[in-house]
Image (cartoon, rainbow, N blue to C red):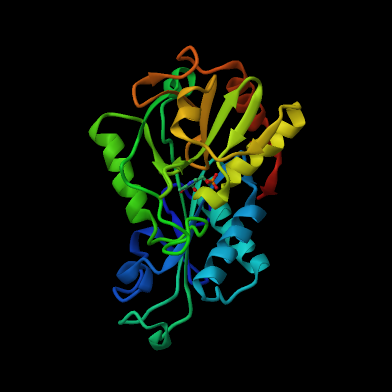
Length: 296
Ligand SMILES: Cc1ncc(COP(=O)(O)O)c(C=O)c1O
């Protein structure tokens, strides 16, 4: 029943189905080959944060992978909003997963369905409140971000994440909260599920997408917040030296939101505590999450 807390629904290929029975084919290309894309989106007090930007990025991912989602962005947006409404999830996390469709064999000529489209909602808390107050210990992973000529890291494709999972496992093995990932040139691209920001001498920088960073929606929001706050912010090729020598560092992502990072590879960053600029951005970000987006 709509809005009933005990029954949760999934939007599966245009139909709302009970979550408990929801599933896709064993020959779905997302399952067989990682041939698809996804979005993680947050909803704050009924405001789906920057929904338009997420839908635009999803469509760009599918276009880049060479398949059509078969419905308009408007219809997609309505399906997401409908799923949030029926699940009564005014605060939570929305997972949108799409794949090329169903077909055994990797050749896309042999697909026997349209794209698979799944929308679900969840509770999600990645880090404790304490970690937002004290900051994360982070390592650099040995697993690299692939170059765009292999698997373009700007595409939020399902398959690319095997690499990020390997890097996250490296962090887990040593009890770190996240792992930074370098590109093939040895420059810092991003973290396994977040973008990276550095503060030095009152200026903020973040690695460019051409260096392997995902064009993060939270990253975009933080760049806008810097403009509002009058803090200079620009993209810059970033080395580990830049990270270790920064006054403050923080990570941004839909799941993690904006979280300070206070050590990297056992080097203390700044004075080892979340800095004043990071804290002011976190405060502005929390305000923005309530107003910038699609109200269900
Ligand atoms: C590899 C990677 N980088 C960065 C991000 C942050 O992007 P966003 O702020 O759009 O969630 C994510 C999460 O989506 C990610 O998976």
